[in-house]
Structures are given as structure tokens and as C-alpha cells.
Length: 221
Length: 221
Image (cartoon, each protein chain N blue to C red):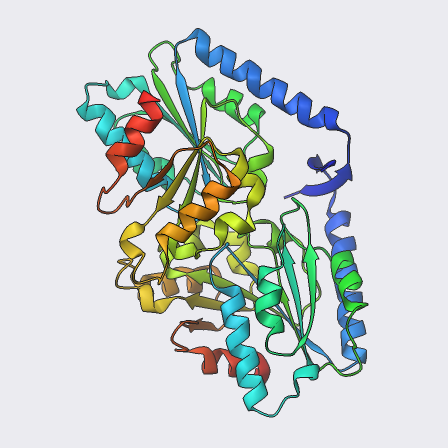
């Protein structure tokens, strides 16, 4: 790999340029009537499993598999996309090499491989990382932050920017809460104090608890 | 924040320059007789708790608190350093803003605040991130990769570069293995297939299981 991350001090204009790219991508989606949901969170927070659950609910609610899309960002493997592809949905894998987040050009490349005319909803799973994706919005209509209780109670407080920028906050793996000695109410209060506007949903992708609620928050809200 | 991560294509020389800086830092540590251990892993993998356990063992084994150092990397808070500082050890907090990993210049800044002449061992906790720290060695004598079983079985396979570069691999939170339906033997086989040389230690920072073994692997090996 001859790619490297270099840090430079830049002006506000770079963020604005990035946001403009994201806004243009959202306008493209809107022109096709596609709603997009970006999932961000640590490795192992349960993003893929939640998306699989949501796809299952959508299929049960009469959505055709071909009307659902999935873009999976990952540094090296296609494991997540293989899992999601079993549901018959349109899917594209993006391997970023050692790049720790997706950017809008990645998404444009991926979308070229999807039939946008058939699509109604698009799930974009960012690379597992609780830091960098926050700075690079992709143009999705909702940015969903997933934090697993097994990561410990302090993850919202320790990642204030990511928490503030989320449109929906998911506390996942609640089936592990007692085994992990985690106070769910405290986690939720911490998230709420940083982000007063985002709905907070407690889920277990394993048991299915709370996933219906998350579906309705995303599609109904 | 007017800092942004920009990706550029660069030659092998940048990695070599980075590695040279890290090597120079290790030579500085060697000149003071200090052994340094870098801990890397996802947010919530248990890096801080493991370091606290290791410090406890070192204190029980006759090390003076002032002979132990801790550098804590975090995007925004000093929560981890506050926890570690209660053990009376020398400690420095580095807040990286939105930068997702430590680099050698961070460590030089931190070390200026430590009394190297009194130090015997130095724990460096990288920012919680399973991707980027791998590319930026800091000069520690051992790089310790911590993966929690609650992150799921596939985390080594999904992060092959980080797994390959580790000197010691820790599978942490084994007390949650059954609740998380994780096959520890499979995880260990996956890690071993990517990295045949690193010792693999199973631990629970909560119960203390395996931490003595980790201590001896780090200090004895």
C-alpha cells in the first residue's frame, strides 16, 4: 500500500466542500426517490447484524429485495457484504485498503453498480471506526450511530463529536448489559446530554429486541 | 477544528521516515533503560482496564509507582488517564482532537512531562481504533493488540494488517465469551493464521483471568 494518511491544517472551506459533495449525492438519491441510511460505529458494534434485521423487516413489510440496497465499507474483507447479500438485496462492497472511513467518491463508485431506478432504501455501512466517519458525511438522509453496551458506558462521552452529529443513536447488544455491568440509563443520559435531538433506541440485533422500533424511527420519522 | 485528514498517494519513503522516528524514540528509551508497551484496539476493547491490572501486578512485584509511566491517547477526554493516575504512576494525557491515532511527535511531547530517569516501564495507550494506529508505530518495544470477544469472532480476519503487526495479541473480556456466543478457539486460530509469531493471551480485565500471564509475556519475554 502506497497510500498514507497525512494531517494538514486547512480552513473551513474543506469541510464545506465535503458537505457540498454529500448534499449533491443526497439530491441524486432524492431524484430517484431513494432514502439512504448511514450506519457508523466501532468494529463489532453490530452494524451489519442490525442492517440484516432491518432488511428482514422491510421484506416482511412488502418491500421487494431489489428495492433495497446495501453498500458495505471495510478495510480488507467482504465478509459483511456476503452476509447481507444472502437476503437478495442489491449490494456493493467497497474495500478502502487502510483508509479508516468512507468518502463521497467511494459512494459514487458504488452507486454506479446499483440500479437506482428500482431502489427505495439504501443502507450504507461505514468502516468500523468511532472517530473519523463523523467528519465525512456521505449524504445519507439519516446517520445512525451504533454503540454496543460491551464497549463500556463511557463511549458517548469519549466521542462527543460523533455523538453530536448522529441523527439516530442506537445502544445495541442490550442482551449483554448485565453481563457487562453496564447501566443503560446512564449511557442514555450521557448520549442525551450531548445530543438532545436524536431519537435513542435500545436494541439487540441478536434477540431482535428494539429492532422494530428502530425500523419505524428510520422509515417513519 | 480546522484540522482534516487528507489522503495522498506517497512512496515507501514516508513509512520509512515514520519508522525511523519511531526507532529513534526507542533508542532514547533504551538509553534510560525504559521498556515501552503500546496498546492498540477498538474503543471499549479494554485497553485501560488491562493496563490498570498490569500496573497493579507491577506494584505488587516491588516496582515503585514513580518507575511506571502511562501516556493516554484520546480524541477528547482525559477519563482513561484519570483512572490510571489513581495508581500513583507518572502519567500524561494526549488529546488528539479528531485525529484517530497517536504519532511519534505526540509521544515526544508527552515524554517531556515524564521523569525518564526514574522510569522503568512505560505504557502507551493509543486512541481507540482498530485501523490507523497499525500504520504508525510509536517506537514501543512491544505492540499489544487488544480485541474484545464482544466485538465478534471476525475482528482479526477483518483487520489483517493490525493483526500481523502486533507483537502480542490479547483476546479480552473472555468472561463474556459465552454470553456473546463467541468461539475462542476459532478466534485464536484466525489470529494465529495471520500472525504465527505473536503470543496470544486470553484475559478478562474484569475478573483478572490471564492478566498474570500477560504480565509475564510482556516483562519476561
